[in-house]
Amino acid sequence: MEQLESISGYTFDDAELDVSHDILLPCLLAVIDERGGKGTRVMDLGCGNGSVTELLHRRGHSVVGVDPSESGIRYAQQKYPHLQIDRGSAYDPIAEKYGQFDFVVSLEVVEHLYNPRKFAATVHSLLKPGGTAIISTPYHGYWKNLTMAVTGRLDHHFTALWDHGHIKFWSYKTLRMLLEEAGLRDVEFHRVGRIPPLAKSMLAVARK
Image 1 (cartoon, rainbow, N blue to C red):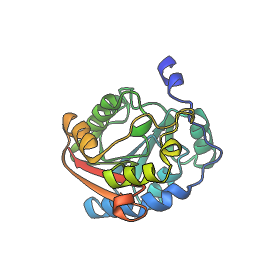
Image 2 (tube, rainbow, N blue to C red):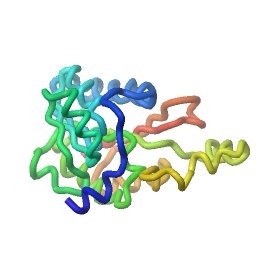
Image 3 (cartoon, rainbow, N blue to C red):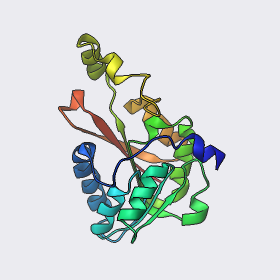
Image 4 (spheres, rainbow, N blue to C red):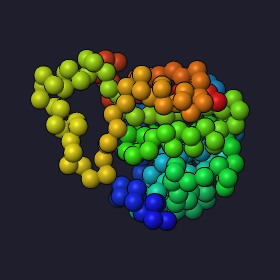
């Protein structure tokens, strides 16, 4: 519990989807539909306020949500009592509790983590053989970083003043290395939001 308390500072004000989901969800849902269709078992790892967990449930999937945020889980359990949404962490041995899944979805989580290798190992442990991980994180590439530099946006984007904010900044290369090191394979990327060179986020899709 002490470890859980140390990583649970991210807070929520409700159990609703937000503007970032407008960017992420079309790609996420297209990948799930292409690779599994309805009725698959999905782990929403870092489910936050449960809004995506609920959306996946409404689309016919069997979904479990886990997140360390006390406020996020409280709002999720109040609004979506029919879902299995629990307080927990990717640093915990959660596959022992929940078993394995066809998909592990983790949206805008890995950039917040001090120990991303432990996260990646947990993702691997949660997947059935042949299962698919879908992990999103803000996109970083040469042209986007150069554009932020020349427009004076670096301090805003890489701010150190956001409590419990982003502490890891991933590229295609580093995120691919993280996932492959954990035993995942066939990693592919989708950029979403804006034109591709200036994309807001990327989704890494990998298979166990």
